[in-house]
Length: 136
Image 1: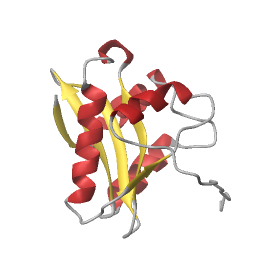
Image 2: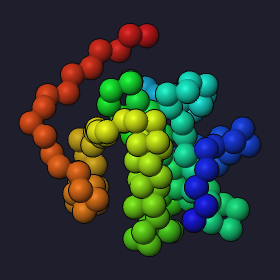
Image 3: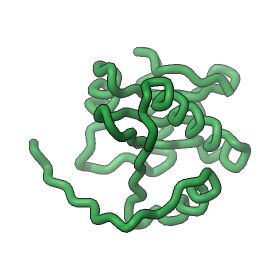
């Protein structure tokens, strides 16, 4: 799989992938999320392609101290072939290339099935409470 930063022409294919993987929620605008990540030097949308088709993605970024990953997706017809591991490794490398030494990730309630995938990659559950406030 070839992994690179998303290009302008990739946006619709990324959104289709996220829809296919059940990642889009009514309160998130994927076009806005992609544009916001791509315009900052502290974040990027990485895409994995096979035969010219986008089959994987990871939105990765950092706050200068910790990294975080969102929208990790692998096309349902290409899952269980190591592509998730490859896109996560690319996200981790993106962060380490920028001096970031720890990455956090969140698993939405209802998507606990991916927890074993992340555990196999070396991620551990930490005793934390995640809180949020919508600002706009």
